[in-house]
Image (cartoon, rainbow, N blue to C red; front, side, top):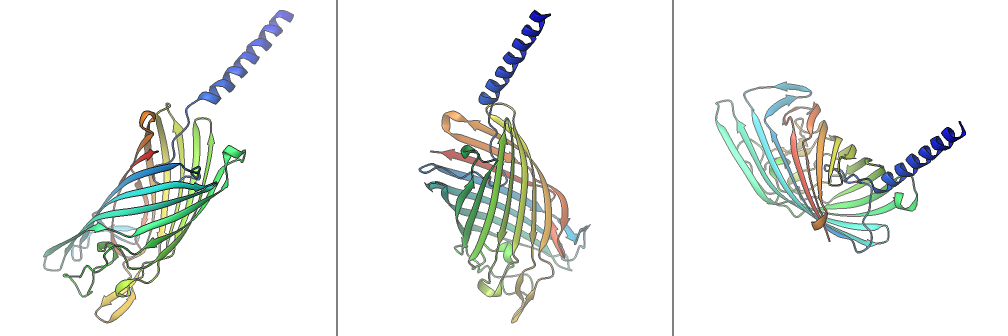
Length: 316
């Protein structure tokens, strides 16, 4: 009997030691694709991050209900390519500079069935942001927590004139920028445990008045995601992406400025994600497909059923 218990204790000790060793060497999950995690770069750590997002808004929604009014039918297509330069400048502090290139297209149909197509492409507004690491798991804290402050700089063209309606200028969708300086604040959190990680982010953007009496509504975004390292190279995840935007103030007709009733929205997406690590190149590639769970367009506006998001990150 004594030999049995000694053998059992030996096996338990062996399994415990093996489990701790496996936990120390098991694959680490990659960050989320659709939002920023709570880990700030170390000093002299740099990355170039290329992103792409596509949305095809071809279904008119009036509030929460899908509609097909015929007259006033609109279809909006947007493609955004982003390049972010990210650098750890000091201990617990990093800076980011993001440039966005847009290609947008708007199709409209009037009461006579005449279709008008406008498109715009070029450089949009630049965004600069600094983030500070408040907590870090590397230092023994229960999670990593970062706070950031940023500013959108009006570098995009906002003078695209309207050829199909009473407004002298196109609305904010078919402009490359708004002509306004827009501050933003963000808080991001990350906890990694074993092969898993949980990430969250809150971001608020204050949109100020820009060119041609246009003031976009303030934007609140919230994200929550879970990732699991399937292998040392592949991470699968699921993210909840939500946003609420207030209504715009803009020129409704020549000399008349007011709130656009067909603007503002509340959207919620569920996004399956997959990321792949290429360690030889210090590169990570991620793809996500946010699918619409809830739509309230707060007026009559087109909305998409899903989006396509891709991200390529290279550290050096």
